[in-house]
Image 1 (spheres, rainbow, N blue to C red):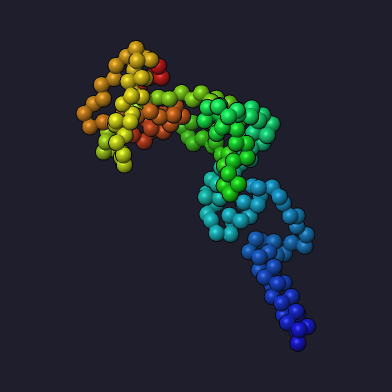
Image 2: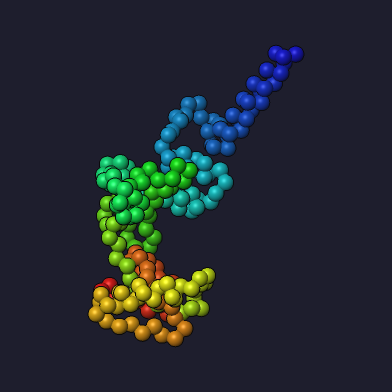
Length: 194
């Protein structure tokens, strides 16, 4: 009786394997290679349940993560010291979060041109000041009071003033966000880089 159960289990495993191979489009393939390449594995998995545009979009993110991870190994940051600023500690995390498959993704989206790893100074990003109408924002905190000292400091550094129009809220943004803000918020007021 135990031998019969073993045969049934073997038949079930064999039919399960056949079903998986058939679903992957490999049922008629006599020989196939198992790949450890992240993109080919993703495309096989994604093809099971996702549309091709979603598969390719995620493949681009995964490719960016792989490229940036390789760059992190080839050009690792210096080890921070106990009193180093938080940016040094953040950038020293070479391998990222162990359960996040794309922790190193730095893929840009149009209209921003692709940026190969190492071509942007992550330690010294340019912060820009913009103002958006409050109707375009979902504000969950007293952002205006928190941002006010930053706005004053930016204006002092530039030697200029900026009067925020009624109904608008000024805020700092990363320079790489400006192109997307211009595209998506036509009413945005974007101060020059200085």
